[in-house]
Length: 390
Image 1 (cartoon, helix red, strand yellow):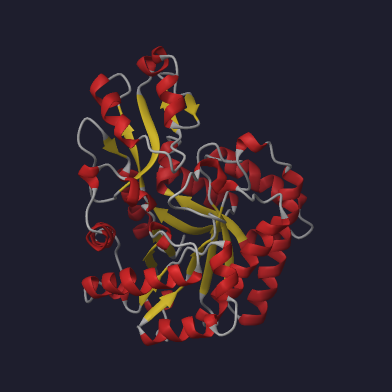
Image 2 (image 1 turned 90 degrees about the vertical axis):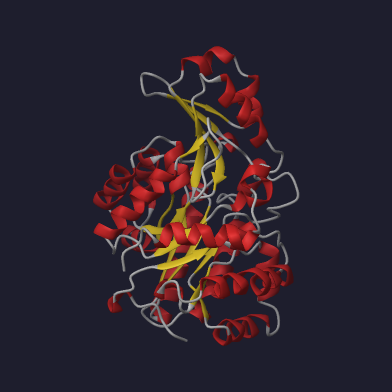
């Protein structure tokens, strides 16, 4: 298999996360790769050396992961990847169960890192990833930020399981010669959600660990540009704060959030078309004193005292918007945060080598933003590739 080797000057893996596809079993996941990923590969053929071999970033549910480890399924998949001039460098392990066609909402955080089953599932994903990697290559898995704030999770249990995970993937890394790492993905109302809370969490985790160096090597942040924009965090300041603290950036999710002026009645009315029942759409209002008022979901925002919104300077909504296409005015997106991260990457190319386009809401976008799936994905790839220097 041809390798992406940063030493050769490529310096970046870029894929789209297959959580965009309704697929909960291994066969459904494999069918999506055969149908959509290979078609996209064909569409983008020759457009960038970053896409040869074509990087894949599967999302595997716990059910799909268990099925992939049965019989010869994994061996067959490795062979299929090679035969189709593809590669696999990362797996999305945030959603454990169903992610489409049902009420996901806060259930996406279950089971959280207080439960042994989350650890076991995550280690399965690393075992699946290893056969795709050569010695010296990196492999990453992304996961939830420990838990959800409303669960009032026992942080000691989270630490216990994360440290076990770090020790296990340290052993796998030593045995294979690969560099394996887990990325915890902060998002609004997660156990930790913004730059400051993330830094504080990692310091507590390191203090709890008997060997903090192993944890620092193997567990980092999955930096989602949608999520940090939602928190009104400055991109460069956040990345520099993580670098100075020694927090590894395991992977970057390239995505954008919905933004609007909450004092504009037309913007509020336009926002109603994004209120759908599948995913959690947290709303964050920035007030004139720079404080942030949070709502768990769009229905909570719409039923709140309207005087709160009337006092705010801006509202940002956890609804992933395509990187290349803004919603119709008066709504807008936060894609500038993703652009700023890619500009930072061009100046600091070694800060992270794993990048994933993650507009998973394609199936629930309002009609004006709908496009054929491969057309949608290809447009996002081109938006990113225009901004990545190699």
